[in-house]
Image: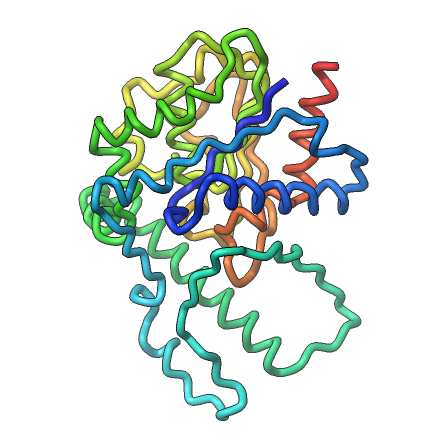
Length: 297
């Protein structure tokens, strides 16, 4: 059984080994918290890397969530000691942030409470914006082109799409069963792969923070949208209601398949709900992967 991790966008500052190690660290953290005694060395895990292709095409992802924030949130008149530095530093060796553990009896400082409230307000505002844009695909596409150039390039450029697919397919084995775990843009890529290539078997398909529910994405997929033919097991879709990029389950048409997609809402990281760290280490996600491994033994 091979596990194929398919990463999302904004990874062009990393290389394949560094990004794979980050995912493995997150996965290992989740296994430990779930008390699953599994050695990573015993698993056949691959993470095809395509982040460098954006630089090859001389394009740069200019997603800056701060540019979408209402200015009133960015210039709160807080006391000096409560103000936060809003500069963004690229993290070349990302750490594994633990999932939040809320204890009602544990007192929090005013600074901590304000930080959580600020993060939740931002996420809810973005979620409302995403719900609005989903009714206007052309406007949504314009914003995707401006802020999410990697997503737009994949959906609109056949050459870029072909190169991404070849990177991933080089890790697929035609005679083995696979568990595919895809995040963000990676879920769109994985969906396309499962329809364009039919000479391999997928035992379980797990999507994390998927934007497939958005109409602007669906319009770029080959129609009709359907359950992948070589998926011989379940499709689990995990989403966070606070994740403005993926705040919808895949249960309405055209994703009302039979057998149905198993949608599950989970809580990820408050300050960055779309990050892979919050998804991959979640106990429900860990269980979906481990159960699939056990079923094939």
